[in-house]
Length: 228
Image (cartoon, rainbow, N blue to C red; front, side, top):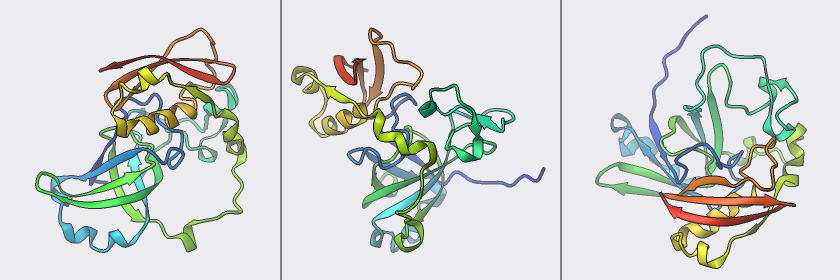
């Protein structure tokens, strides 16, 4: 089998310290804010010349927490309850031959910093903090957008949306600029699809805080918020 070398050009800085709770696709939670920081050898500002003219970007990255030896031709998507097997290339499962992820994010700003060189501020990313990035490309609507596209088994994604009950006293424990994003993340039901125990307390680490919650009859109730 032919092998090729590929370099990490950047890393994502996000509010997700672990995989649990990360939106299942990019763009689902537009309120999320992340920063792409380039590796030292790729901090030449000329490499980003003109990027501010684009509104969205493609990010090619690695499922760094899902790297395995070998691969399977079928996987069990959580959206199908974790029991139905689908061909790996018919899913966006992280368990793939090359563990590559593809995300479309909104470019919010280009900042020139003294410590990290030129960084990109993006919205709606579905990447864990520290995720290695292999490439950044502009999103081009005339070629990349397909409004008529069918989504297969993912067309039922809206069925998983929850109503979030986040008591004000607990919500105020979060920084004000993180509250809207936290609620949006919880709305998209962070639980694995095969775990639906109404009395179980789940924990999500977000923006340096541990959010504890329960879910009963499509209502997610936050019961505890603690700084990590």
